[in-house]
Image (cartoon, rainbow, N blue to C red; front, side, top):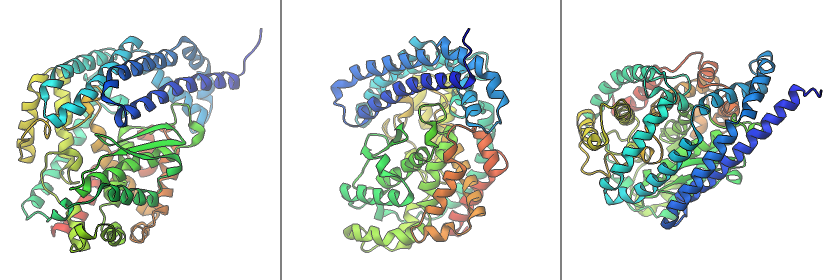
Length: 506
């Protein structure tokens, strides 16, 4: 009888996980191509390829061999210190395995093929304002979402399984509690600001040539720490970040030559996601540890760079003169103060990704409530546009003029399932303020450094305290380690009241 050591078994597990990761990364390359350069005629074939790869990856990950290795190695992992990489790998792999083994491979492939098809429909239907084109396919998405949740029954709420996949440890009740507390604090601030004359943002709507916009944005994120030796930027319909491996982490943006914010803040936002991924310990490559620990933590990094840093007065003290030089016709007669107020304009708006920091979370709450109602059966797809418009009228005082600026604006329901898609955005805003407070406590000079265009201290602190861990720590563990507590509303409200209190003399 040949005895196999724990080390050999662990190596066997890592090799099997690497094969799964290779398949998933290959799918990511195909998805990136589908979102950038693929001709429209490739849609059906690409969906089938992605479906096949997702099924094979799922079957490999949920194989009996991986299950046996996890069982055999369980006592070994439990005997290791909690912080040991191998202990974390076994914990995270077991958690993912126990989740995914509940989903049949055929169902995974069906979902992948369907959402790939719906995404391609959405890319043409949205600009054409053609709700009818995606309405019935979206009904199937909802049916698949409900079926997917049932594989995880019993649960407290039908949305819980999807929320847990994105933000481990949280449930629908937790999100509702946090959102309720935030809404109570947020609405009076929104009212106090919007009662005043809004800032003049006409300077943002002048002509900004695409090539120069891309060049400026890429120069800024290079300064921030995005490594172009391990990444690149391309154009797409809806900006996102995608990881192929630790040496290839890409971002995608979109450009409007008559609206400066669209490309610039999307670029910085996605670079924030990418810098997180670039900072993960490369030893985790090929394992479940080599990714951000939750949607909320991931979003906290993009929002830190996009909002806390890139909308700050200190940031534009350094970069506005350079921006004026690049766009003299558009900004030659604009002062830095005017421009700074413009990029921080607070006004109820229709488009979530263009929303200001103060009203942004109201957009997220609307989407969260609607997708929960859909999953519960309290709302059907046919009534979704009406429900969307009613919430925007009630919550933000504006009514979408069409589907393109209403129910069809976000890619999420048209490229994935319902549930777990939106709460991470507001959790990310909350955590960005908490993490930034911790960074300032450790390094009070960070704002002064930003005013000189120096981001090394902040970037290094984030790498040391957040990035490097990947999924080694759960989100609750990471938040506890960095802040000493859990998700809180108060830090975000302090930040918003300080920044916008100064801008609007509150």
